[in-house]
Image (cartoon, rainbow, N blue to C red; front, side, top):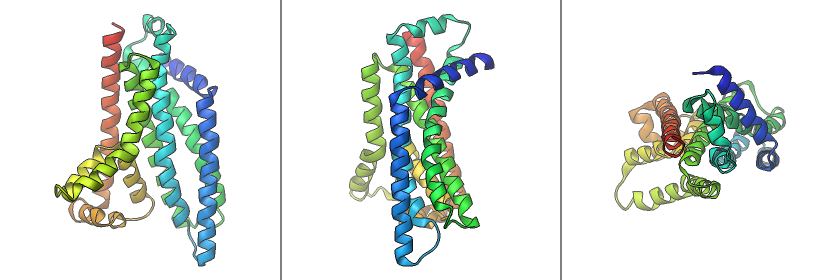
Length: 276
């Protein structure tokens, strides 16, 4: 791997993304929503006379699973397809750089843009939570942030794979938004409606979680925020009895890593087919 070429491509993609309206708009929106959710959580704590950061972190988990993955998918989908339409992609591949180096650089640059967005949103929330957070809460907050960063990597990688395969930029963006809706809402609705009818059971639900990177990230955030598997209800009780909290977290991390690796393979195959 040519590290210099990867760094050059990553820096170019990061600068291009940060100058775009999507990143700035998403970063501002995500920060505002995170601050609003945190303030509502703190108000609930004050009204109930409780301490800790529970309600605030619960809201942050849901936000982190919706906003950054959508941004990562759209940025990734726009990357190679946009360069192809502008005639830049053939020129880039004509340089002494391999397809793997190009894909790695694109993914790293766009991941940096997504991480900046997550940093703005969670950084603002952390400042608000600092007044009520205890020492025991720090590890949970860091685990939520780390899980969100990991889901962002998966989203960008999947988006780049879509971009490599799609015939046009518009098609890539449409597929990325459809896939985000599928991961964020449709799969959960299907599992909730069909699971009981076909007696899917806890194991089937666990497999469904591993096949959905957004839901896998949500489970990882819940487990990392300080709760054990029992926090997830009957499904969590199954995990606690079979693989335990640590085993469930490792399985979810392996699922996210597999999604990322497969996305790189698909992106490479897509580039080879369209840009021989």
